[in-house]
Image 1 (tube, helix red, strand yellow):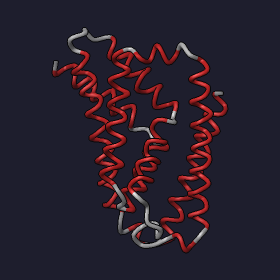
Image 2 (cartoon, helix red, strand yellow):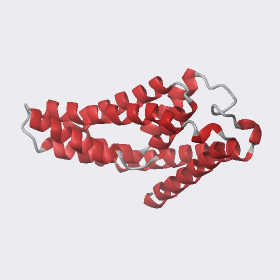
Image 3 (cartoon, one colour):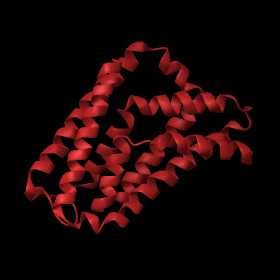
Image 4 (cartoon, helix red, strand yellow):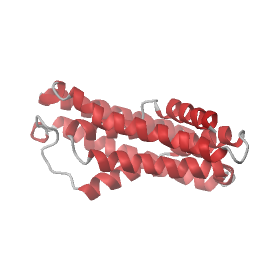
Length: 202
């Protein structure tokens, strides 16, 4: 059972480690110190639900409905384009910069809704959790699959909370408005690049 949990942790951590829209958002929230716990918890819980569904076999159902996958791709691309535009606007407006992050307060509701958008509107999340993690989990005996899923979900929690709270170590660097401008511009470009990839897949 410990072996299955360790394999799940390794699989989950290796897949989530890649830089993506969700990770960039968590990093920015951590730097700004805004609703970090809620954002990290939302990411971790969402991943846990998807991982459990993937190990249970929901990935095969999703793959069998082409229209569902196409709809997810276009919705995800639109979300990334809009959020990229918001980050570009923030980068081009000096008034939106401050030593502690964005000057305009962000509500908890807005932070959670944005986090949910990055998670549930990203088709690659389904590929990783429902598809890849689910496929690996299917290779274990039925009685070991819960341990595998727990390990993979645990990796997600460790990663997001480490990223969110570890971002504070970069606080001295981001004490200057110019650093925030660079970060927002970089995030905007990453969002648009990911959106372009999704549109190309469609």
